[in-house]
Length: 337
Image (cartoon, rainbow, N blue to C red; front, side, top):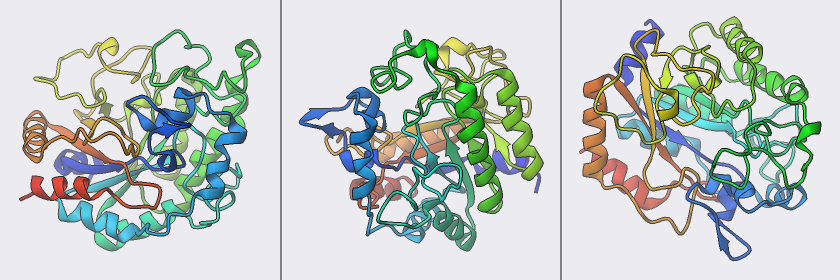
């Protein structure tokens, strides 16, 4: 089936934000993070040397990829998107480009993306991978340093606590040494991908967005690319976080859609749209965030989005042991009754 047609018909998917931040559960040294607990390293300005200790403790003994994928399938979802690398720079796959990954840096030593890919294949769900192509707080030259004045979920878009001299940063170095080679790795090592979900294009240049776009189409021509790659090189539009619009405007104002494309935003060339949304307030696991959306509210959102031709990508935040919270599972099952 044509991937554009598949995406239109899929309508409903599950996203999972999972990483080292899940161990902190929204709290560091007795202080809560902001609403987005996956931003806690920036929100609390946690030094890399301190944050890396989490890798030594990351051993999610209850993680079972098949349990996650069976839940998604049971709830009527057609695809699954996992954070292969978030803004903290930690990869949930075995990367030769950078040792800060789940296999080389943790006692778990299992390729999580690989196990999820196998489970998706076994149970008939398509796999998508989230990858933070601009921000990387583990890198001296990670992006975001040109946009420090814009409010965000942390103290800064870039790591300015370990690396305070923004004028000495060069994103080209990070892109060449880590971003580009890691995107190539996930394209070549985990079978067929239905999409790659990029995020917050704050620093990336038009040439670099195009390089990533062309790389993806070289290895996986059917893989769709969301608009947050930046600079207008995309296949489908990611609406704002938790955005449930009343209509799809003929022209979309970039200022109304958080961080999709700071260089100008255009409607989807293929009529493909998606809203990624949370079940509570946070994307990553946050122990103190118990403001869960009701099953009826989620069902209403799903119906409204489907009527507009917009996919609903609903996020779960597994805890540090690899468990999708029970209340989260209960809500999702009630939605599909």
